[in-house]
Length: 565
Image (cartoon, rainbow, N blue to C red; front, side, top):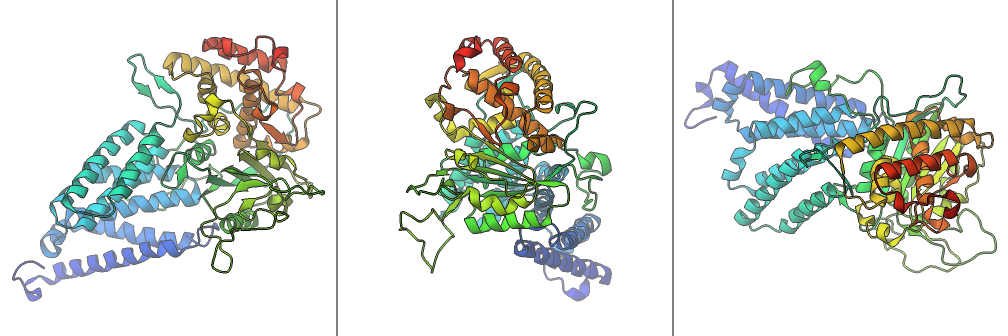
């Protein structure tokens, strides 16, 4: 209420408007704060709570639009408060994306974050002597950048990073705060993330072309008529990142970021289909679930990892596949035992920070004991009771070669090289070459050939050529008489089909590359692929040499495939 005006001077209708607004605002904050108490795993528990939260924010947003004049004059509504409501709605949509893996919700989050900037909702914050309000603005920028990264809006990311940098500078000069280093680290992380791709695609005027690597119509080889493959569908995926010193931003390593996109279709913009920007349609959901559900786990402890695995396993529908992607530092066995079982080869690192025994982390152990903070192959055995597709990108990926299919369910493990040539190893901070091949084979192929940029016309011709190569690899897999049936059982799902094809392409390309000499530098799989039919096929080798010639890097590959072995 303004000035000397008493409550009695305000018309009853306007007083009710302010009261209703305060109620909705308090209710929305209460519900929003409750979101963090919901379990992070499980598909069902969160939905009704999210729905209620969306409903209240829908009402609040429309209410402030309809009664803006009264709220301005009687409540003293400030533009940053409207911005905060819009920012919370953006966060809701982003979390809806994380919970459902529906990329369409990223567009919804983007439309609200974009409106905040276009309408300068946070502009006045800098004039107020309240550091906590400026922090709200900085956090909004960080969240907006994450959504733009996921939507591949790289040009806008660069603009936002510049604006955020100026905001941080202004904030640290005006308020002598302790979080200056923290915010500068955010800037460094996002700058490194943007620069992580080893190759840029250039237009004729040398401007950078943004390419998308999500699944699109036409980039998955269709199944041949009459081809007998499994009807399994990829329903759930755990994407785990625990690599030391890898580029990261907001609990996403670059490997996790690439793999999550390899498991998504190109997003459809719901806002353009249904409503104008800035209006809420929280119940407008895609008719069909396009993408497998994903859990993104950054540096999880063993307990957390096992909990999420168990939740996914429990809720996996019939005829569905669980995918586990591990990008993590290798843990190697210390001792040597006479009997070599599934806990004797080491595995990949899990986080030790929060795993404590009797209040303190265990430092010393007997040589005969196994590493506790490690996901051993044996830890995955219980989950092979249902179809399981495992990808391990680690310096100890070979530990997962020693798998045993105890229950006869479809099971495949794709395993990264464990040793890379020095020139490739030096780039590992910017993401693993193996994951890069699974995400964008042409990006990885160009990178391993030392290219820094490719012109758009050549890039598009090479991509077109790769589609033909993919079709041929698909036929090699399905026509092989000696291939393990597990590969065919997974081949009916488009995401898994593309991953298998890219894996074969990666294996064949590295075998022909002159820098990759050791067998440890080649990917492996469990069960093993029949090499002559796939990764050492003469037709595939011919294709790889053609691609190398197209990119003018044929001197890096063996002309005669026999020289490669």
